Every structure is written in C-alpha cells, then in structure tokens.
Image 1 (cartoon, rainbow, N blue to C red):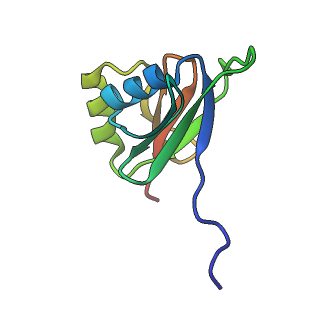
Image 2 (image 1 turned 60 degrees about the horizontal axis):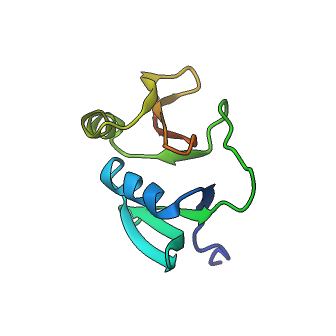
Image 3 (image 1 turned 180 degrees about the horizontal axis):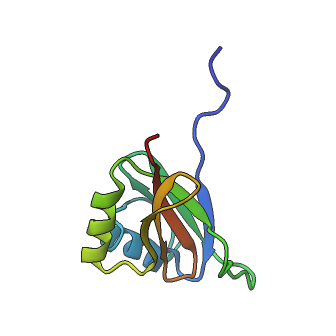
Length: 124
C-alpha cells in the first residue's frame, strides 16, 4: 500500500525571510527555490532535493528556544559536512562528536537563533 505522505517541511517564522534564505544559501549550501511577495515574506530553501526549510515573515513576538534543537537533519557524510561548515563560517555551537545515544552530530545556530542539528547514526 502506498503511503499517504509525500514529504514535509519545517516552517521557521523570521524577521527577514529573504536574508535568512541568503544565509542558508551562502553559508549552509542550500538553494533558494521559491519566493513569494515583494519584498518576499515567504521563502523556501532546499539542499540536495532532500531537505526543505520554509521561512515566513514573523507576525508575533515568537523567539526560538535557546536550549532545544529546532530541526534535526540526517546526513550521509557528517565529517565532510562539518568541514564544509567550518570553511563557510557557520556558527557551530556544538562541535562534532560521537554521542552516547548512537549519533555522530554537531549543531549550528542560525542568525535567527534556531538550533539546527546535523547527524548520522554511528554504525553498530
């Protein structure tokens, strides 16, 4: 039986969707795929056609958690991605490491304060 699900995307409310998308493009290697409005108040970025993040113009006083991860992105070559982000100047807030829960991961914090974790399962 075919799944009823197609795909999902996280939507982050931000002050400036286009500036956020430009950061994700220039520092994190995403591609800007969609913009709506003039100036844009909704922008979509993708990486490798596998990860999609949407940014919408914030309408309230929402602030991201400073303690909890906003998004977990699973990757195939965590060490290569970590090296890439070191070179591009990403704000790495938790360095790469093997975790007791079976993941090798690291975290970045984007300009809006969202904590994004990138990781891969450690082979058993």
